[in-house]
Length: 507
Image: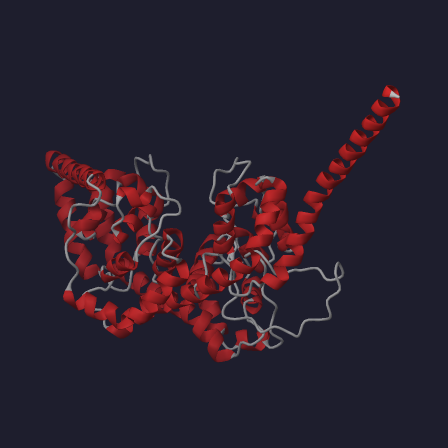
């Protein structure tokens, strides 16, 4: 399944003919999203064709597990999958918990090649493996090479900037805000910037120069150039030399963010009565070329915002951007306060179009937009349509399981674990499963039926088959209901015995 919202398998899986069914004799291995796909007999040969790109990836990441995990998540998202959960990443690289005790975790190049071999599906050839996997690696290598060139031009100016503000996180944050479009600055408060861009605690007061440069380099896109950035660096160097001006600039940014937050609250309180700025005609023209694909996506998801949000995060990550925060997703869809209070939260088809109208960049053509956005939307539609079809078959059995355990998380978790390969179960304890799969508090002890069904549906991938899952469901339901039947029989026997004893006494 899309395990933790991810599974490494790319594209439909070629299945061998099923052996004759023998209840209890065949263990089902394919299930939740952490399962690894079966390998192609030619996997080594296929991966060898792209050894140069894999070596480039290894050199770029220096074998660091964290960086490789990000790369594999981007590959998953490129194919309409959610990001790879840590358990799946460790399984791909054949790492144990013991291997991860020392930080940073460094992976060997041989292990990385083996991980790519495991991603080759039975029906893959060199070309479609390139389209599904290698093209993402090449794009990342291209982006990284561009960033490496530009960061060298920025290293000197950044040193001056860092000195001028004495490494103050606030001073560096104000400079970074200068690089964002004005309408986005209010959505990026300093604590979020520290966590998502600088990867530091939200209360950080100062940032070392090398760390700032490294994180800035990692955040750069193809369109970011030193030529555009240096004038803004120089502006803030001058600004930092005047404490009063720097304080005034910080106050202005904070005031703008507070005003934006207040306006957002007012808009929510007014139930969306404020009319947003209309989309540009050029953007509408591009998006409307893909009306059928967008309508199909809305139908497949039922308009559920959790599914739409996952798709938009996949689009962001495939294009080297961080995932969209939930509040920003609500703003994109222009959801009202009343709409966000319903369960599940759903968006209309019109709201989905409005969100997509905001996505084309000024220099995007229809072909570019198709590659960057629509291709991922289509992949997500296929997965959602498949899981929707499968859940209808599974619904009665899942409901029976839920009824049998009264929605107890420990029993539902036990069923889910039986779908996972045995060696990966230890990496998915109950609290983590609650949080990442069921999307509830880690300590939750009971899950409502509809929440369980929707979360299970969202966890499914295109390879998940109801015919494979039903036997596992029936086994767990039988185990839960058997004790109740035995207890009922015992109670009936006790009542009958008591009745007979009463009759004999009366006689």
